[in-house]
Length: 334
Image 1 (cartoon, helix red, strand yellow):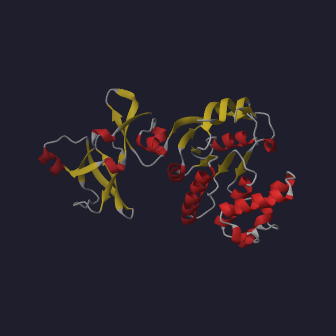
Image 2 (tube, rainbow, N blue to C red):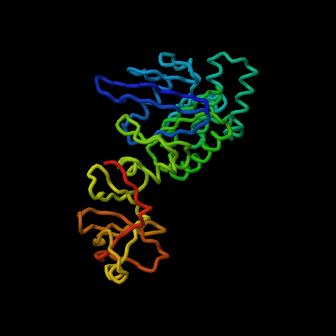
Image 3 (cartoon, rainbow, N blue to C red):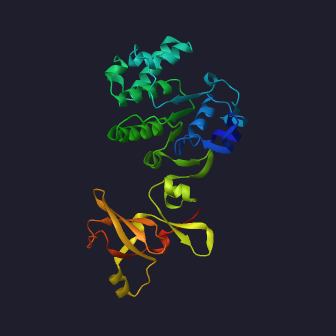
């Protein structure tokens, strides 16, 4: 695959605080890559350095094999979309999209051609004469994306672009963005703290923790085989159990893989449960109940799911035995 973005030995300091330790990362042409992590972990700083809005303290940034480390943002064939749309309120949709082309003095006929193409691509043709205040949040975000795409960038950078939208609209826009990226075939680098967005939209998910890459893998692999406690905790819910004889590792088991039985059932089956405990709380979650079980051995709380098609309905203070299939446990670093 052709390399599109390559970060080599990148570090970034702010006022003598090291925000990004040594970072090496390659992103390929046509990939949808998500930088995922909590607020303040350095993912937006990474994006801004690629865009040229921040300069690395050390290291090099390559765009399509050209060293752009010291190149001004407007000279990079990269555009950025922010959470807050930054549209000109006195301009129509078409004028907002055209503005960048006018600043670059693109010929008028070429402007008209590109604007028409991107209006069709983002399904904004019928809204071309509206102003931002006449549109919904989702429509405004589509305008911001169209404006970023009209210059035909090699890479589109998106910094929490759906963060200001409500849940239902966000889900719709996730699908639209992924379809748009697949139709265009260009590289998208997406920043979010929302694990569901990362898993559903990305070809690769890069989990960032303290300015460092914790794990870089396809979504399914990150979910099924997290490498560290941080990665396992950040992607979905997880329970952690000691690994006998190895204090450096933990066993990660997701709630859906925890088998819950009464102590009597476990005894009758003649099997030794991994742990016993007491149901302390039951949380209604729509299609299932989440059980919070305090373990006798460690006094820690673990979670398990109780699906409504199962024969047993658990209650608070029930004594239970828990177990799981060996294949469903994954060892992770602490």
